[in-house]
Amino acid sequence: MKRRLFLILVLLVFAMAAFAQDIATAEQFFAKVSDRYAEIYDYEAAIQISSSGQIMRGKLFFKSPSLLRIDFTQPADQVIVFDGERLVVYIPQYRAVLQQETGTAGLGAASVALASREGLSMMKRNYTIAWEKSPPQAEPLDAGSGEMVHRLLLTRKTVSEGFKTVRISVSESSLLMVRLEGWTVANEKISFDLSSMKLNQKIPATRFLYDAPASANVYNNFLFQ
Image (cartoon, rainbow, N blue to C red; front, side, top):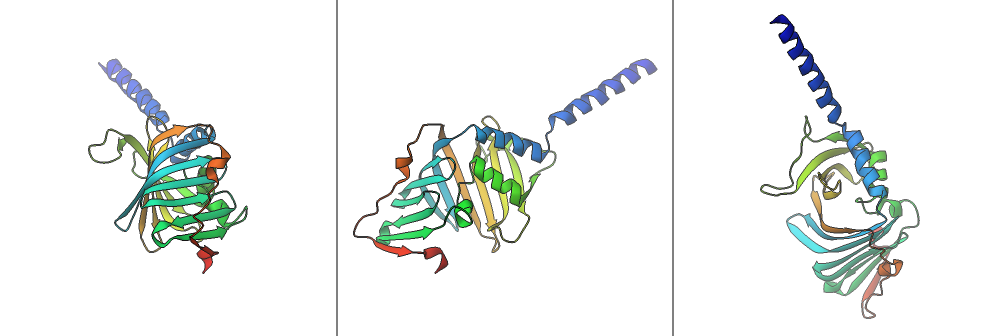
């Protein structure tokens, strides 16, 4: 009887040790996500941006390392384009083009899509990474959703970061980020949802060229005015 009990205890110890090895640290899991994005040189996806009760929807195009374009359907015909050095926003409601030269560093680097290997590298440098819940486990993206995700909570290391906290929801099956939620210093929440992602589509660089309507008013250096 004692021998049997001893064997049971030994098996339990081995089982617990094996279970502990299966639970990756938040940093290890983040590294796996980074490795996944290292394989992606471009993608397109449906995007939804939510902030202060307002919702924007559109189609996002990204090409490594820093080309980004969003063609919105809500609000209709609005466009955001970043070519690595210049940010352009077209707001059809006001027939206005907002332009900002950012250069290859500073704001330009910060404008890179977070859902990319460059964005992940930036987050690793500037944020402390942890599991949102302990012990970590997959849970539905939303109540009743069939999309199971792992959630990481990132806390900024310096006050220079625009978001004090970022929560990332990573698909359990694809290791792709399907939701990013950021909280500003004013505790305003901005949420980005990505779905229907198509990877490595050989998107041409010309997709990120944008000619605004000739009748639109152009406002330069808008971020600093």
